[in-house]
Length: 429
Image 1 (cartoon, rainbow, N blue to C red):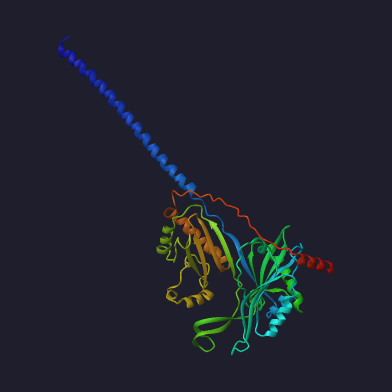
Image 2 (cartoon, rainbow, N blue to C red):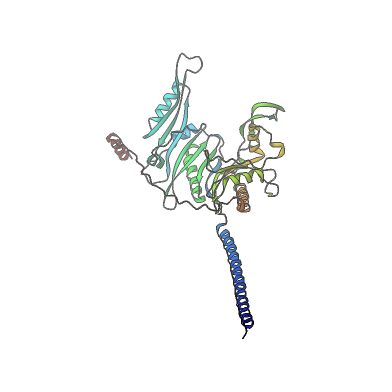
């Protein structure tokens, strides 16, 4: 074999090896590309699945507390007489009744003050706070005036709370705390009774407990009236006077600084409610979206309040129409003063506030009906679901809070004199 033949044979063998290597490399590259595309597609699917898992549906609205308003069939109540005639049961007695009552008393003469002292000293246990006291016989205008808050009886809050604030009391009404047994447990219900026959019961969470509260309340008030007491609907309640500022008086047809007009009292209740949207929120982006897209007026200042606060103005004239009810003031009402806006919220609009926090918790508070509260809940839920891609926090993990139980200490002095008086009162009974 010549040299040329041997070189040619070597060249052919080299070409065959290159073809085999090219074929192997091509197939390998195709496999790698296919594997890469498969892995990329699986990554996208996993991200989509993670988004689906993270985007949980909103919780149902939970109404935590609500203040209920009722009206008696008697429209003029002498709250002073009813206050002194209401008996207080001892706290240790496991029966239904009134365990505490509270009232703001004003004495304009010394005779009225002495009468107050005589009534007060008949009570077994009481505390009082002097708000104002004037005793100057040589004064030109006010020679004597005594304003104080009297509390008779004791409740669970007085025993358990160590640092309770001593607050002032309302005028033209008195407050009672009723003890009611419901589902083998005693509950303490706070009730305000006004001189117009209006009654307010805050913190109601159970309808059956509310029914028992109304029954016991009428039973307590009935001895002060000759006619049979019962509750009446809002339509049958009498008109009350309301202070109006900066509006045209309908009687004189003139604009006055302030005047009184008769209106029907409203039985709207103050409702506190909350729910969770299911994901963490970027609050700055949420504030911008509420302001620019939905044309609302949100406020977010982390140094003052940890949530995004916003007001929703429900137009009572429009009603339940989602395409028109956007939570904003009409164009002609945007430039009104704060006093005029307060007047509008009494008639044309119902103002509801909602707060949205970083953890996804949302609060909705307002003096409104359940229908209006439900509408605002649907609106807030719609915003949080539609804007999920823009406002959700991707790398925010839930924070587990560790609650530290603080021991509450209360010093109770049980004197020998009080014990003897208690024994004597028990023997007399």
